[in-house]
Length: 138
Image 1 (cartoon, rainbow, N blue to C red):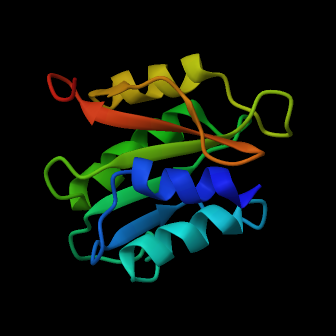
Image 2 (image 1 turned 90 degrees about the vertical axis):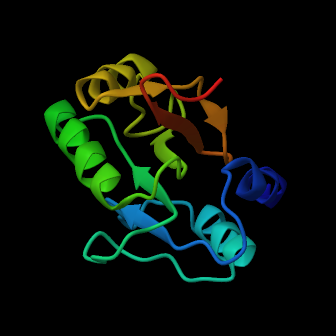
């Protein structure tokens, strides 16, 4: 099952040496995703209290959390993210506890001035949605 996460460590767009900040960690996150990102970058993930600029962001999001809070968190994460650094919202897959609809993420992203891409399977229980600033990306 780790095959998916290992493939996606590259698909996330993180590179060796990148500092990746993790937001809204909880004990339900997929540690294989975290391990593969750390393996890819050669760096440990930093938490939301890290106050230097970062090269990428992963944000764990579950339904039932406040959508406005998601928008605010995206804005906060963008404030420390280097230009064009990858920003991913990770949500439980449909049918899993805490599964969030992609429209909820899309709406929160738009409120924060971002576009949300099509969800990508990143592990057996989690999908990832890459966000980009309006006018960027392909």
